[in-house]
Image (cartoon, rainbow, N blue to C red; front, side, top):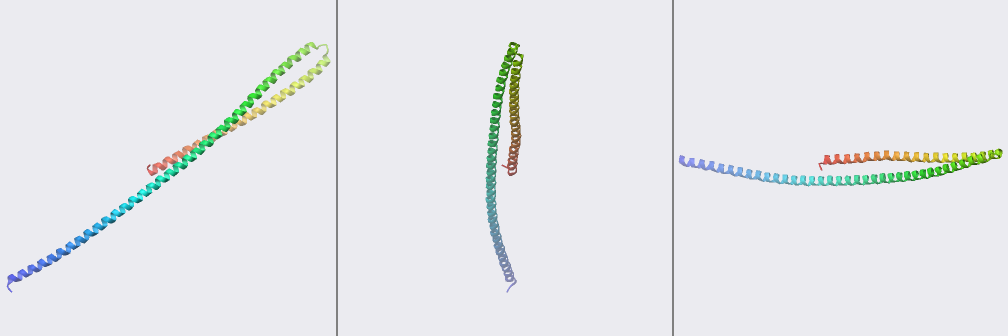
Length: 202
């Protein structure tokens, strides 16, 4: 074989090796491309799963907040109703007590007027009955005892009604204190709900 043929054979051999090498590189590139496509598919799947998970979490948070708001609203409604009923009852009792006091005061005034009339009658009888001093003194003593008894009864009634009024005033004071405590609870619930909304980002 001549040197030229040898050179040609060497070049052919080199060409074949280069072809085989390029073929292998192309195969590896295709394999890498396939792997990259698979990774992209997995990434898209993970993204989809994460998106679904976030959607589910947001839905659960929204449902939880809705439930909390509903519970707080119901509790506030109950508290307001109880407070309204309590104040209504206290006002009714106070009105009844004041009505009774006014009635008793009117009765006492009537009795006082009657006593004054009787006292005037006694004065008239004393002036007219100077001749019968002994009998007049006995009558005066009896009438004075009756007047004192009536005055004592009137004082007892007034004292009893004053005690009742004092009890109603104490109940109204306690109701006012309970009203302030309930308002504090309402403000605390509102503040807690606001904090929950801020943490969730609603």
